Amino acid sequence: MPLYTSQPLKIYNSLSGEKEDFKPIHEGNVGMYVCGPTVYSNVHLGNVRTFMSFDVIFRYFLHLDYKVRYVRNITDVGHIVDDVDEGEDKIAKKARLEQLEPMEVVQRYTVDFHDILKAFNFLPPSIEPTATGHIIEQIEIIKKIIDKGIGYVANGSVYFDVVKYNETNNYGILSGRNIEDMLANTRDLDGQSDKRNPQDFALWKKAEPEHIMRWPSPWSDGFPGWHLECTAMSTKYLGNHFDIHGGGMDLKFPHHECEIAQNEACTGQSPVNYWMHANMLTLNGKKMAKSTGNNILPGEILSGDNNILSKPFSASVTRFFMLQAHYRSILDFSDDAIVAAEKGYKRLMEAVETLPSITAGNTSSIDFGAWKQLCYDAMNDDFNTPILIAQLFEAVRYINLLKDGKETISTEDLASFTAAVNAFVFNVLGLSDEKNADEDDKLEGVVNMLIGMRNQARADKNFALSDQIRDQLIALGIQLKDGKEGTTFSIQ
Ligand code: AMP
Ligand code: ZN
Image (cartoon, rainbow, N blue to C red):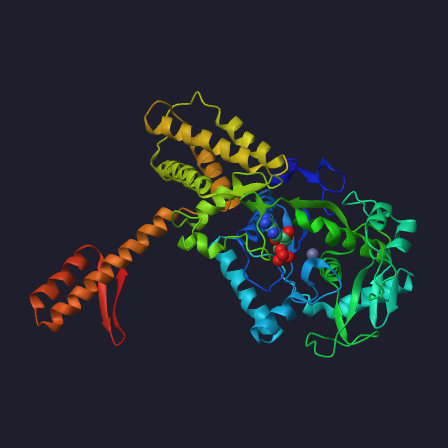
């Protein structure tokens, strides 16, 4: 039996404001779309937090034996500076400032994004579509919205008529905003805009003559709106109605609100069953953001190269730091907090490393089955990683009792306990045991140092010493091989 049949999951749905039982549309399958990065600069640690929240959610679904199609896009066109419609495309602006082709900007920061996610042990999504690769799909959706009388063309651009839409639907259903209030609180259009109402948003923008990122369409040579690309890519790969749509809390309005409106206008149905929003990482109490400079880059954490940091921190320590907070809580970054997380991570890993040395014996007074279920209960309660981590520290206490001979464990319990600890630590939380990797690096450094000394001895014609180094390494199971490119080694 797949694990999900015995582990019922609850998810907090931003649309209803409640925790709901998770029921996928197709039994055993999960379709999940998460808004990806706008690739015009390096991702900061705040972005990493949101993607990590969904990485753990993805990992837990897989652990429960669901078949998951996880789609996370790359926004490589259409995201306008300040998230408004009148202004410059973020990627086009960066390209102009740096005198690069827009696609050079996209390539550079897509590679950076992938490198960072790999360094932080993220699982790759099932599909990673780009907005520029789905222009035709976006044009088709715009045509449908115009046909329904909810999109209008003005001066080569196409806008979504929010007021018209709201006559039969509820614009504000996700964010809880009220359109009358919104209209009352926004200034009248200054006559510069082609929009009928300030709340209307662009589906297609006519490109200025100097704009390179442009595609032909029935309305003008131009480019698609930001909200539209996610509608096109999510429905193309997951269908008009799918299970989960996620992103950072700051995307709820207008981005996700507009996505719902586009889908409803187009297909007459709400696209998503569960809307999930991850909360922000802050620095000095303020949201980390690219635009304000109030941020830390993931590379700076790994190198320690930022005045805020007292030293470097590993990727797993950073993961552990982030997952000690629930994904819906705000998390403030500080050096003290990550130093504390490092201590916790090391304590956990030390215990996990001693697990293989524990031997089974008599039945225990500890109820390992109940402990395991508490781990599941934590994750089944809207992916509560801090409670799961608290349970893992309970496991650390058990391991220490077993190690000190103060408790015993049956063969069956030991196998199940070991499997559960490993599954939650490595598969679900995505932590790695960096001590082993660290030791490998050190060994490589020492052997390379000896190779250097042997080369020097040979250059000095001190063959007795060079042979001694080689032979003693062989005795330790380390074989040197002299080749054209220099000396390499292998460990037997
Ligand atoms: P962007 O590249 O700006 O579209 O952002 C990519 C993702 O990172 C979105 O889901 C944002 O909501 C999220 N994000 C941006 N800033 C933060 C932050 N300070 N903390 C957590 N997530 C963030
Ligand atoms: Zn999106």
